[in-house]
Length: 158
Image 1 (cartoon, rainbow, N blue to C red):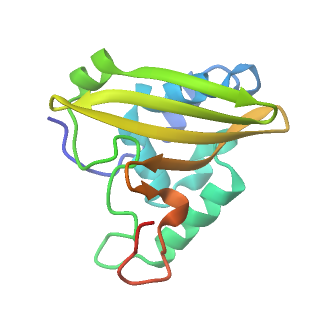
Image 2 (tube, helix red, strand yellow; image 1 turned 45 degrees about the vertical axis):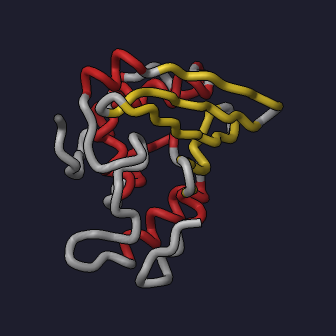
């Protein structure tokens, strides 16, 4: 079991990937799942480390997350890549499947996998901007990142 903790490895993941312009929306999401802890760095204020993968809406949300930080945690208090607190890296790698639908400059990628034997699904919304796919929102069962209200101390999830 891998514990929930911020990781600052986003730059390494992105530098190891092929150029964003050559990647499909699925390639972008696959790169994220190749190192799922790296997304915690996005949540914890390293949005700039996303480089070409971060859309403006995601960068704005993560800035609000940093502003709402209390006691070391912002309003996003879970790992949105896995829609939970911890995971089994081997199980995630073994069970991950990605499906997508692209319509023009918008794509949705569904990541389905198992967490400790239970099914999980995370939906990624991406937009093609200047030839690069950028993550604009992420959703799971009962939540979307864009629905998290960082201005409210209780961080209501919609």
